Amino acid sequence: MKVDLKGKTVLVTGAGSGIGRAIALRLAGNGASVVVNDISQERADETVTQMSNLSGKGIALIADIGNYSEVRRMVENAIKHFGQIDTLVNNAGWDRLEPFVKNTPETWDKIININFKGPIYVTRAVVEHMIQRKAGKIISIASDAGRVGSTGEAVYSGTKGGLIAMSKTWAREFARYNIRVNVICPGPTDTALYREMKQDEFANKILTSIEKYMPFGLGKPEYIADAVLFFASEASDYITGQVLSVSGGLTYHG
Image 1 (cartoon, helix red, strand yellow):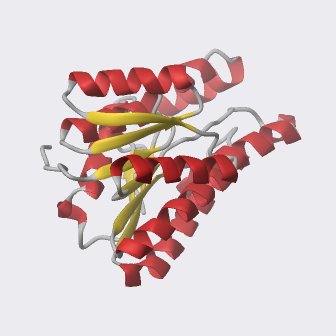
Image 2 (tube, one colour):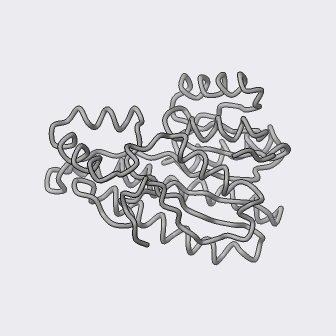
Image 3 (tube, one colour):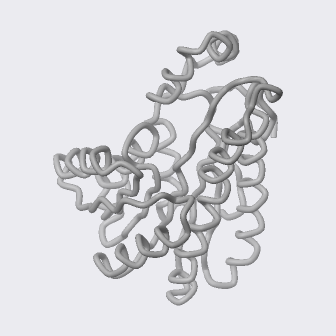
């Protein structure tokens, strides 16, 4: 899919690796200026370098999205550098696959801070700017686990389900300001985090079982990036408050 995003600036959280990096590269390759957010300077810089190889423009801005002060500072710096933010991609996320009764409060806090509070903080900081401009798009990366649940991912599923519900509410509230809000729900995707989780015996058993029910195989980060490209383009201007499952047929309904 080829679209023209020249003159558009997109902020992508968690863009230092995996799905986030694929999104940043796809958007940059279609002309967008990309704000690469990550918690790792090294990873963010590598994404910017790869973007420059595609003749894309971008900057790396480091912030922990679970820290509201850091988020606001990042957004201010992004606007100062590019003048505007046209699209926000709430991509950053984290997961640990294990039975709920083996979860620790530390695990719950990390999952909730990154997957739920993070999008709240970033969206609040960015949407104030979008409301002033009366234009913008917000694309959140949730998960099919948030739609149908997933063994070993109780709190993770809860945060992603919450992100879906919250995004639908944002779509209602922000429509008056010409802001569209949509959600993409990946299924299992071949990323470094996914491969790391499979090193655990319990997680490997669950994920290997799930893969058997994916008729088109394990997902690739580029598949999610293509869906983001669609929602960031003019082709989606008449769409808001919707949830798109990109999971290769893992979940057929809804």
